[in-house]
Image (tube, rainbow over all chains, first blue to last red; front, top):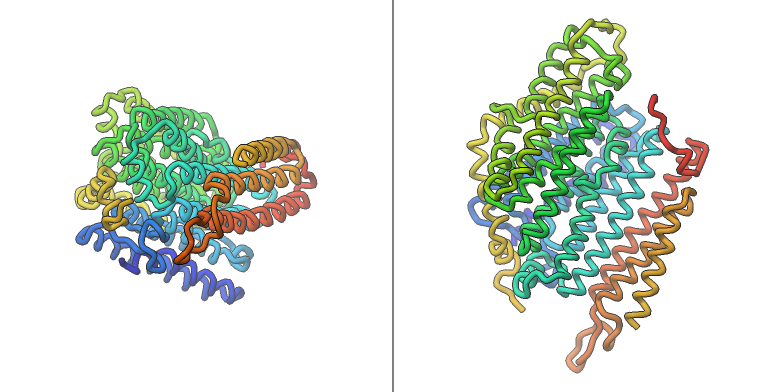
Length: 495
Length: 112
């Protein structure tokens, strides 16, 4: 029992509620939201420390022992994701200070942002399938509000599709929970894992697993990503960046949790399907990224390629593959946030997202150009940067289990991704400078700090990969040995 | 009884799917609402329909009904109520801004 486990959920929730009461105090909102994200960051850092030295931390809400109550569980995997969420969230928030505009700020932008973080943190920490659904909904309802906030025509049009597809996914999620409950008679994840392990993964459980995979794939953008490019290009930059960095990752987290803890007994069926879906996702995403000549479209398709690549690591279900996936997951959260922020700054400067109308920005904005270059290299996985280590491990994992096609597709699509981001770099930063400084639609004042910090973070994650290895290794160990998770939650309880 | 419920759930899903595939926004929302009812009934049925007394434990109770599906449905209904309300407001606002509730006419313009 550790009360700290629930703090990353209730701190942003309560402070968000307080902020709703004081609607007109924008400065108060800004200070409180920064404070909240720093607090959740410190708490998750402390949780990581505790997990490292004392093992998996749990909290049984209301003192109802698992499997009867709702359990909150923090293992190393969720701890690392929590910390990354806080850091990336904080930097996107600081970016929003200088770019989101007073109108949105007055209409509860900061409380909604904190509620989004509440839902994301809750999804990472919960140990109960139905509670996962509730946390998903908290996150999604905030994202519905954030995507429509401002009420532009494009936002409204895209958000209708976004809301509809997510509502349907939620219904299917509930239906899958119902089936799982009727087969196993429990909704506690650890208890589920124990029961499925005892009776074996029969055909019907695998069918339910496929239903969960379908639901989470819709949320993560794995194969079923048709809704993603439209929705992620509609909202303002700060919101699009936090969506790209966090929302799909929650779906990925859920797939990881379910297919390493509960449904891991038939990897030749379930994990192979994940692998095939990942391969198709990477290919289609990379083709989309190359085909378009629009910064927003290229970046959203890059999100899709990243999702495919992370799940390729899970598909291998090896120690190397999962290590790579976790490295790449952390890298992807940082890098997708920063590339969306830089892309947003370029679009704000020029006033268009069409690559043909942008040229020669390197003369007026050299720093922005070089940072974009570093980020582009990092996305492609060039050695000293953070994308490299994940790619190496995932490729190693795919070769170790003989999925050569998966590894090959991963590497080929990396090249295609490099081409797509270099296309943005060359078109917008090279060439004749057609835009003098006083013709620009906005300035880079106040938005450079988060971008610089995130770029430093990707360099740091690349150079400090060795130091991170201890933590990633603990996370992988507990993912590969579900019994440690079951033991920590159920404390020896058995039917 | 379970068979009857299953057929009912199937009918609700069918109607909901049909409505979601139409072009009018309000019908789409009604479709999601009907599917949600189907899902709630599904949870109830999957947990096993009434097989004993009320879900209360006492010294002399021997049979009781599983209360968990009902708790789940209660939560799901509340969440669904909120999302449906939000979706209705959203579609009304979209109707005001875009001047149409026909999804075929809502398709985006590439050059904006």
